[in-house]
Image 1 (cartoon, rainbow, N blue to C red):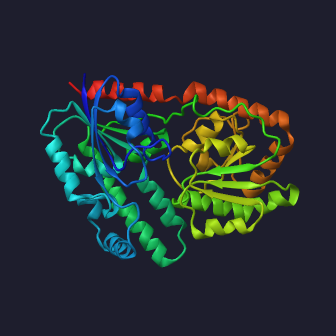
Image 2 (image 1 turned 135 degrees about the vertical axis):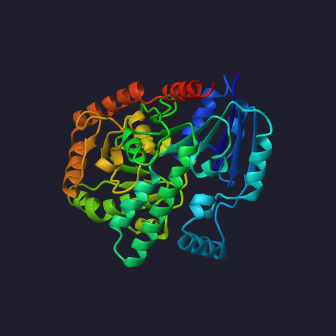
Length: 392
């Protein structure tokens, strides 16, 4: 049985897109491989549901939130250091001397392969063992897009420095035997600078967990996402400012914003009686079951949006921008509805509200599409194949 050293920036959780693939890798491969997990522990997630799939695990505690003083120091260091990503951590946050020692000591034991996520790649880039970096997407491209969109000079400088440093950090992947991303677009972006073979392993969805047979009589719009991330904030802001007022002119329909860490601005939206901001919820399925239409008005961000796959699996019709549906090979008008401007988005929502036949057809097609194309078992088989190719 092959031994895998798996390194992750936090305890993998099925509720967080950044660690979701690692979570399912452990659950699907733990019976056939000896997996030793090393990760930071922010205190937000529980490892107990993964313990039975792991041969061993070690964690180092880090604070979920930095103090005001530490935030200032962190931001200052990030702004003035052009080299911080190249030599140490992803934004200075994930470098920890104890983590470096833990990994070094752990590697005194033999392992067949190392798998690490993107923020932790620098810890093992020079280790002479077959290595896979789970990059997920081209993070530098997101920062470059934000730089292009930025208005003020300070904002432009901030985003360009982030782009510069992350672009430099991504060259760490050249020290690995294989690099995994979740879609072809990000593969093509990374291939410009990365010589390591890049494999596309699409995310999956647990269709047994995300299923829905309950018909809802009350019409509701639902957005799901971690509200601490700029792309999700941008999406909600765009929808609230440009689209939702147009919908309310035609139809009174409540809008639910579901996700942890909403900003003060997002929370303030509840002053409108039509809007509900849930914050962190124990089970997102509760709100997906209550929804009628799932919206993803994304205007920034990279990678596959797993929330779309989960909504499709729950038989929810999806209205999305091109940015939102990026990386998901669904067909417009069949498995979702594409809407890249405010008027089209508004019209699409209104049509779905009133046309039960169309709404049911798209939602049923979406469920079948996910069942056929996006399973975690399929993703796992591809990772196992990559391991077999690099481990001699």
